[in-house]
Amino acid sequence: MFFNKKKREDKKRLAAEIRQSKDKATGLAQEFEAKRQELAQNQGPLSKELKGTQSTPTGLLAGLKKGLAKTRSIFSGSILALASGELVDNEFLEELEERLLSADLGVATSLKVIDHLKGQLKLGQIKTQAEAITSLKALVAGILDLGDPHLPLAQSGPTVYLFVGVNGVGKTTSIGKLAAQLKGQGKKVLVAAGDTFRAAAIEQLAHWCEKVGVDCLAKPQNSDPSAVLYEAAQKAQNEGYDVLLCDTSGRLHNKKNLMDELAKMERSLQKVLPEAPHAALLVLDANTGQNAIMQAKEFREVVALTGLVVTKLDGTAKGGVIIGIVNEFELPVYFIGVGERVEDLQPFVPHLFAESLLS
Image 1 (spheres, rainbow, N blue to C red):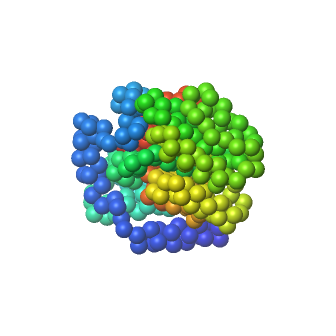
Image 2 (image 1 turned 180 degrees about the horizontal axis):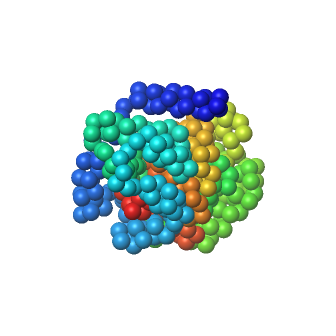
Image 3 (image 1 turned 60 degrees about the vertical axis):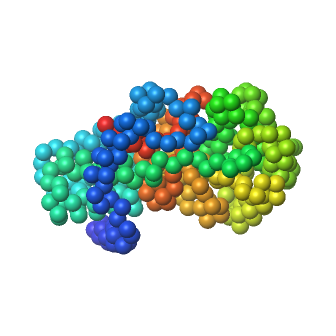
């Protein structure tokens, strides 16, 4: 009894905090429908560098549904199964909240959804459980849609992307796949092996670069990572590279150490290219579920993140964590990994992701 009471009190407290924030969901269903119709005719701007890597919308949606099969089963078999003609009541809302938590949306996002539905119910905007699920779909799509973001580009000279993330999340693989896609667009790509603390990281990145046919600047293990990035920036500028992709150490056991290290790397890049890095991308493994949210919190304290890359969505039922991360941090997801192939690193298109989960 005490545990249940405490749980209810915690939920009420969190709900009160969420209500204090600006409610972006007001009128969201109408806005989403207008956006959906617009996107049906025009798929929206992607990065100029990567637009050509996207397959047709139909093919992309089919690929997403396949890659998100495990996560889709959670939504369709649990959350969407609640849709019926019965009236919404407290029992339904409690059940829906539990299922949202099970789908790894996280406490804050789950409570935001329930709060939104309660508000609509009070205003008479929804009555049945089916109407509540329809509203849920629109809310999720609206949370994910931060304006169809595309990666920043350098106004002149090479564009520099800095990749951060803990070891094992698929950072090196994502860099290799992105390098291959950019090369396929006719771009001259240089990769900098900035994780000099692990010989395996250097070797893996060099192997990827050799495999996809792009240049890699690497130094022996325990070399100064900032010196590696400085030399890479010089090479990129002097030899006419279009894009420089920079790997970094995945250590997170000491935030001050990591902060100092990343700050030094940025300063080294800026000595050559004052505007670099043009984007700092945090790579997260969807398999880690709510731990991915904790990693985002930790890294956001030490580096000015531009956006996210979420990997390994094809092997997990925890893909709903993307909804929680975007809602909590308002950081765009630029790419998602839904398979092993180079083309399985896909540009993130919010409405297609939502449709693949909720249809």
